[in-house]
Length: 375
Figure 1 (cartoon, rainbow, N blue to C red):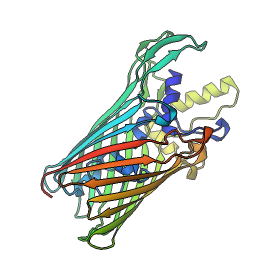
Figure 2: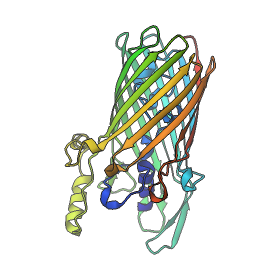
Figure 3: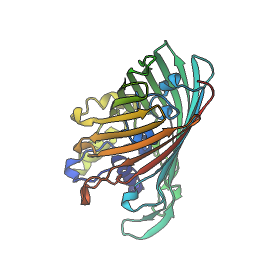
Figure 4: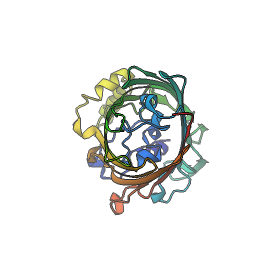
C-alpha cells in the first residue's frame, strides 16, 4: 500500500531530487492536480482566466457563463509518464456545459486515471499480488451570471480511489477510498467587442473530506485542496490576429507533514497530531506551517496566438520550487477551430538529464471540443 501511495505522490510531484532538499506536500488522489486538457497543457497549465470553452469546469467553472456557444462538450486523453517507459498509465477526461438561459448554466466533468498494472511485494521482496489500481472523480456544477462581466460557479464532486481492495497478504484489509469535495470559483470577463481586454479569476477547489483506505479512522489523508489566482490579457493586433498572455498562481491548502527527527516516539506523536488535524483547520494551517510560503506557490505562464480564431499556436512554462517537487518545464501546443469543433494538441518539452530528467517529458495531450448551439 505504501508503495502505491508513493507512486501516486511521484505522479503528482513529477520530479526526482535528493530527499534532504524535498518537502513535498503529500495528499490523496493527486491525479486531481494533473492538467487534464490539451489547450491548457500547451500554455504551461495556465487556464484559470483564459477565454472560456468546454474545458472550463476543470479550471474555473465560472468561466462557462461567457462561453460563446450554448452547449460545449470536451474530451481529452493524456498518456502519462511515457518517458519512464510506462505504457498503461493514462488520464482520460470529459467535460460538459449547457446554458439554460442567459444567466444560468449547468455543467459536469469526469476524470478517470489508470495507474496500470502494479505488482505488490512484501518487505522481503516476495510477490503478493498484481493489481490494476484506478481513480475517478465526477462532478456536477452550477454557474450564475452576476453581472455583464462577473460570474460565480459552484460544483460538488464525488471521488473514488481504488488502489487496493481486500487482503493482499499483509494482514491489513484495504478498501476503496471515497470522498466528497466542492469547488467555488469567480470569473471576471473584461473583453470588449473587439475581443481585447483583461480577464481574471479566483478558484477554491477540492475542498472536502479526507480519504482513507482502511477502517482505521486515524489513517486518512487530505484531499489536494487548492487556491488559484489567474489573469489573462488579450491584445487584438487587428481583425485577424490576436495574442493572449496568461498567468496562474496556485497554492495547495494542505500543511507540510512534520519532518522526521529520528526519534520513533516523537515522530509517531507528530504524525498522529498531523493526521488528526481537521479539514477546515488544515486549510488555514497551510499558511502557517512554518514553511516558506513563497516556496509553496506553483506558477504557470503561457501565451496563445490566434489567427482568425481558426488556428492557434501556444507556449508556456511551469515553475515549482525545488523544495516542493522541482517541476519546471516548457510546453508547446497548437489547435484549430471548425464551425462546430476544436482540436488541440500539446507537448511537454523534455528537460534535464539522468535523475534530473522530468518524468513528464515527451507527454503528448490530445483534446477535442464540440461547440454546439447558437452563439
